[in-house]
Length: 484
Image (cartoon, rainbow, N blue to C red; front, side, top):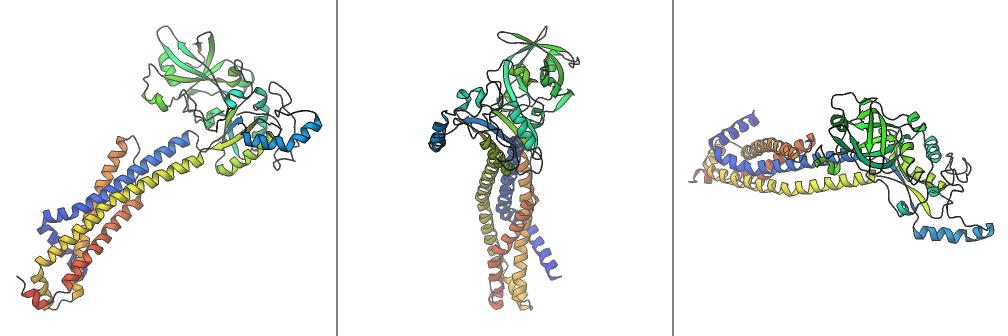
């Protein structure tokens, strides 16, 4: 009952001095709103970056064939010189055959646990851009291998299939791609710019390609080197209009040749990178064909880079280490090149941590206004004590205890800060939503941030209201009654 009376008295006091109460709350309102607004925008940015990197394959493992560092090569050469001399040969590559044939094989049970390994040269494809984005995003470390690796140093299809079989419990799918020619698909009145990209079946799963019509490339398309293609919905709208494109033939005009493909599927185009600001008239989309078709005109028939999509629940870092160990054994006899496995998960974690740190730092700076607001509350409460000195003296003369007086002023301070906190939360949510939408992010608000902000506003009420309340409780009733 005593607390209820104090609350009613506090509210009555706020109503009698509306402008002063609002100005007192202003510091609390701005402080709480600033913290919630900054945290909301920061969470939205972090969530957006995380989802974008995940869609680009942040949890995928990229394998890349690159030239060994000088240090590792020199060390290996020094330790194996006597062996090489006694054998009368110098092993500059792991493979002993040309054109993608398997090299020397080691025992499947003697290396890398129970995983079978072929000691040979090998290669591997980078993380592609968004479906139809007209570009690739390199996911692995790139060495000098891109210009100096020979076909015998790259990985063969058989070696990649063996890798997938050995890690079948961990691998969901493997993506390989071969960039082919760029050109235009034309009809009687218009054209569409395309990049021809040779892919395998796993490319769809790894790159999250969504089909609108028809199907994606099948294994028999690749095995039989069929001239079939999967095109974007953007190309279909320009070239076919309302006509069903499935089963229709398209001609790709390049600078020196014309290629004909039969359309078997249509995928949903997703803009990425610079293509976000490109008009549909100048847009270049990817046209997917069997990788064996693209390899017919490629310089290297084997593979320098490819991506691995782990199954759900697989620890990416641990699996990356296992793949690296397997590849090290595979390239054990290659003195010039090595196959390196890497992933973007650590980069994603670092970026998320960095953005959270920045967000918290800015929130801390914004929180300084809470301190200013608390000082404002203390100042007004001291003024209130001075104005109500005779009231305090009268209450103490009538038998009110010091604790009663102290509780009255603390409750009043808490009410001021709580109302300011509620208004600040509402303002902060509004500012956070506006800011997130202005930057193109989806606003995300943590309930814990709201609870902590409101609790902190109440704490400010107690902390900064205690001194004025104690001063009021310690007043001598006789001196208080004589105060003018």
